[in-house]
Length: 399
Image 1 (tube, rainbow, N blue to C red):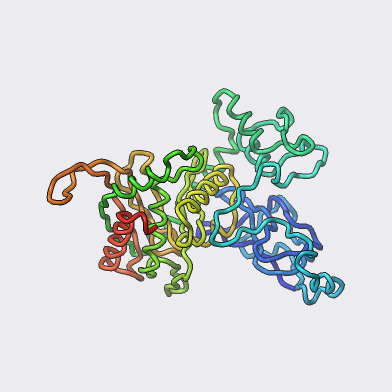
Image 2 (cartoon, rainbow, N blue to C red):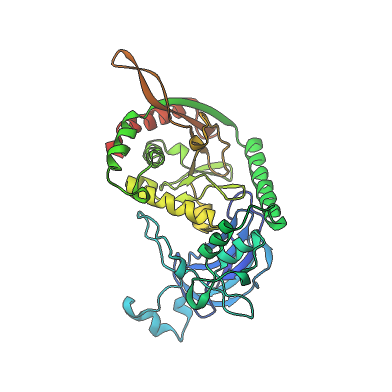
């Protein structure tokens, strides 16, 4: 027997509220299966299980708020299950399907169709998916007034979003205001800790991205908007490749020591509708093609703004990339999110006078910034790291 506990989903998390169980007692569990939905200041997060076995019993009721580390359920190991021994030895094709699809590493995440979202069972109230119910609650929308498009008339996220668009702009619901305030409080606590405990140093470098923009333009020829690659995907890919050469920027500072990661999980900063910010990970970003990376980023942004993302995405970024270029910001200096040791900022692409082949010409350039932990690296290595990112952006074919 082993205990499944309330996970820590970031340095700013002290407790979480169990919103929904996605597996029932007796269900077989495999590594990566979704087991529960937990509400934190960052939103509703789908929690994955990282051990195999049978869900034996649930220890915490939905709606309960408990501290990080609290046992939530008991998982029975398969080899000790006795009665299910024959099932454990069955060929893979005969085993019961997992409770949720697993996402292979190194591929773009699968976008779950709205109709495939788990639907809350009917209990005398309107049937709705959890994410639709949460969005409606935040905006004070009565679900009984929405016609659902899901199975058996269940209200889905898209139905609530359509209801929001058809409603005149009104003052934010008090619960939504409270949620944003809680998130900002959590972010402030984490950033205060970061500035207090981490000796930051800062560097910036301006890079010519003309070759990258030309590559993106050629790549997007005759493509529909939903399949186009943005230059931001190349920023993330260049970072992921560069950090393999400079591993001191990729990992965690824990228990007074730096632990480099042998995998590159890039945290992508995403603004949440209504306020707040999260930076879930694109896993193994260095192994993804620009197209797969762009698809992964679109998927993340869509799920984050719907208030639904996964525990592994929020808990294990090894380095973060942030950009406010689309907001017209030229330079962004980030604050490291502990226990990470570095964060990169990309500003907007602007045309500036640039010396090229001995002549002054207009070129598209971007300012790249690095905030890093002086306990792990120094300015010399930081400068080389930024130079490697610049070199990769000037050779987009290598990405």
